[in-house]
Image 1 (cartoon, rainbow, N blue to C red):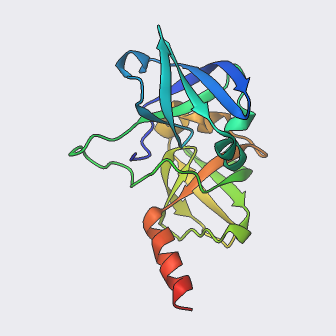
Image 2: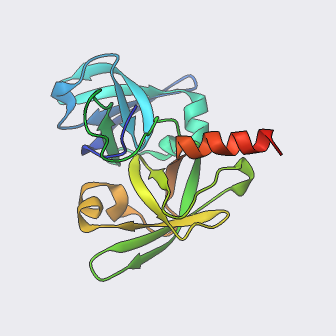
Image 3: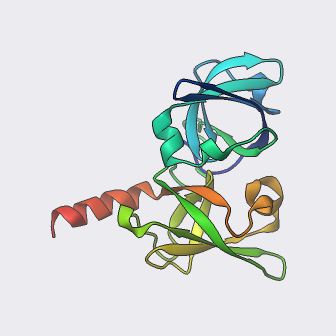
Length: 196
């Protein structure tokens, strides 16, 4: 379980394909605090630490994860949003995030405002995921509030701190991101489907 509050950025320093699996080596300042078998969210995708060496660690993404997320597009030098699992009893500063990506989206617009940025993302509506105005959404692991909710797209407003400390400063039109829709909203949508 995560909160969507990014702790730090990591850098991809190794990629190794083995069968359908992709082993991803990440260099990060949080590496000394990690343990084998620990869960860490990478651009919003919960992956298990399988190896630690010096200041880098390795996680493995299976084919299903690569098919449903943007992790397959990582390259050497790519920056990754990182968050360790929440500690029971700690403040929930973002919202409840599972680390289970629902689908990807594409950035279709970036607007620089006076001191902030507005990003608009478009996603496939056939997967029946929805956003609501002022509801929660997770974009590459970042807990955000939805602005301008539409059937297949939404916008988020980004403050300077988030812009400087996450991958948002590298997004441009055409960038692919991972989305995790609000878990409570997903349950409500499923209940509504069952009663219609």
